[in-house]
Length: 452
Ligand SMILES: [Zn+2]
Image 1: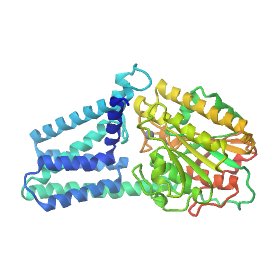
Image 2 (image 1 turned 180 degrees about the vertical axis):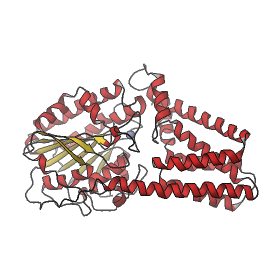
Image 3 (image 1 turned 30 degrees about the vertical axis):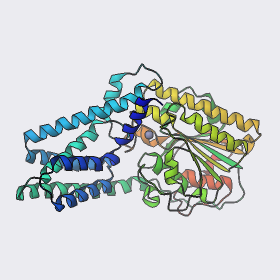
Image 4 (image 1 turned 45 degrees about the horizontal axis):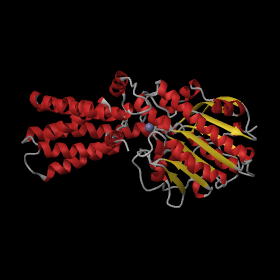
């Protein structure tokens, strides 16, 4: 294994905001602690709680900025400069750590400034970025203040904490509202006979809709031509893999299924499609995180298979497809997302990743033809979320929220539909097409327009 690649991936996961906040808190505590007091530890705990509560919703950056200005004023120029220096060092450290992955990837002709600019403008928490390092500054300043003696420090901290608390509550209210407009109030029809024998969901992780249209993808083009294309399909907030697939499986928004970011573990706690449909799920560890213990889940490590992850995954899919094992196949292709995270989703490489993925789609279609299963199969092409620049997560940009959604197969119409639909609608549509029941918490509507 390529050592540089391995290191890159270790750092790649390390820089995830939710992962490094506690680590920085501890480092800051150790570096700047002069007097040992239990109240400091309690304060640190409360602070971390605010962060997890707000979960880094973009609006939470505003109270962070306000409290930061307040803390810098109270901390003094010399200490602020030390902290700034430390933070810049960390920024460049992460920058070059992740740059390694980008450099070793696909070709050596990587454009340095492209990556630099991306890292300056991204707000999300999955790549090297400058915003994240501002939060470092914030934490370290806070710990400097924790160790100031007397009433002054107490006053500074109280105000900073109050701003953060209000920010945390405001963020939660804001986000709950973001998803509620996706819920459908249409009553779904009774389910009768199955309309198809099996459904294969080809999910392109981090697949931007506009880039799918731009890329040279003959297999996707053919399925689009024969089938139904939704021109205005949306994913849920946050625009991340685990929340999105949890909504697809349960038909509910994250507030109901409880998976709000990619750090969830322990399986879904509510009724979901694989509970009553024979399902095979193929993807990264994200699928293991949200799956219940009795589900059929096959994962490939993207640490070991950075270049050929999807090809490895395909081997598992093909074996099961040959035996016609499941009624529902959910395959999460990761290559497009990985390329977006290192090269940016506006790059030529990102388009090439779509083209490489399309070839794999062709292999699945060939296999279906060969085994005579094509007629009884509905194929759904979708994405869990898009990307903006080299990232995704806060749905600030349209290209993160807007996802491809194509239905193709026997009994499926041929049409382009402009109407707004979302990932919640996919869930009852799967139940309806397979002639099963609806999930208990379903909040979407059956997309009856897909039928001929
Ligand atoms: Zn991603």
